[in-house]
Amino acid sequence: MKRGEIWWADLGPYLTQQQTGRRPVIIWQSDTLTRLLQSVLVVPLTTNLDRAKLAGTALIAASDGGLSQDSVALAFQMRAIPKASVKSRIRSSRTKRRRSSI
Image (cartoon, rainbow, N blue to C red):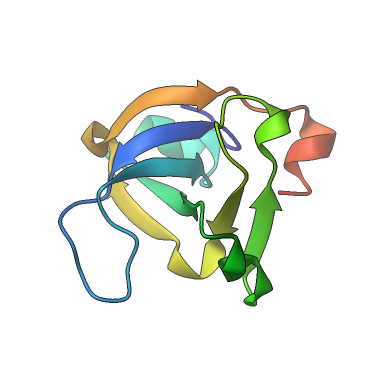
């Protein structure tokens, strides 16, 4: 698990105003903290492209690899989840230059 990678994660049962269930997430915390902690900071993704109009979001193109549909990263819904909730990698991390723009 490395910063900038996209993984499938279980964000838990439905809660009002939060992304929940099984969905892709971007690993956001540093690789050092990920190795040391039992939790990981993630940014959930949604395929609801209307969300890209909100502040604190970024469009992630499916053509970047791994995703079946264009998605929106919801930075305003960033949260820490247990590492055990992170299931399988969808896309590996990008180069340092690309990662800094995520």
